[in-house]
Length: 263
Image (cartoon, rainbow, N blue to C red):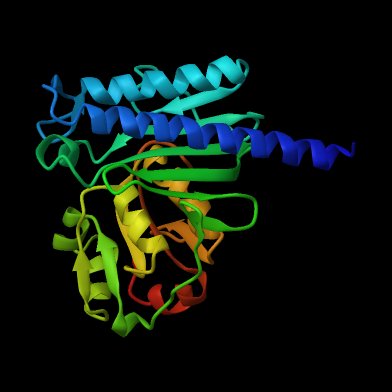
């Protein structure tokens, strides 16, 4: 069998397994939505983690290492985080609960996100909107919501909404407030995963936020299949190191949008 066929088969195996793992983790969270939470502050009072963040991470990490023991994992709740490195042959990036505050307060609007990279190249991403049972994912060519193939839905800037980070919007960081004045307004959802879902469905035209690698890894891979591009405010590709101010927008609208964006 040709080498590229073997690689495609291996990639498909990983993707199908990852779908099962993320679905199982979502079902676990839904079954435990009403259970008492153990809540811990990380860097400040609104940067929270729960026992279920840790449990979901353990579930998925255990599955990855059982099937692919030599693979590397960059996960949000690791105390000693692995650095993103383009020399790593097989790298998974994991956010066990994206939108933890929503999970705690609303019991809604949170997601599980998994991305897979080979030598620094994103091969597939998965975002599970847990309470709506919507799994956004992609293969090497196309993007899907559950089994429905997604199609690009780009509207003119003046007929569109933006997804934004609340602080960046209020303080006009990167010119986000200026840009919003060219649109119908903004939506602030409190979860990168939920925001990326809205982007992929065409409900918002772009997403601007201050994100860690596990916040944008899966979404940027899926969105690329639909003609989006993910960049930093300076117009560079994200470095996947610590927190960066990034945006994902239709590539065709980049010149127009960059008129209002500033680093």
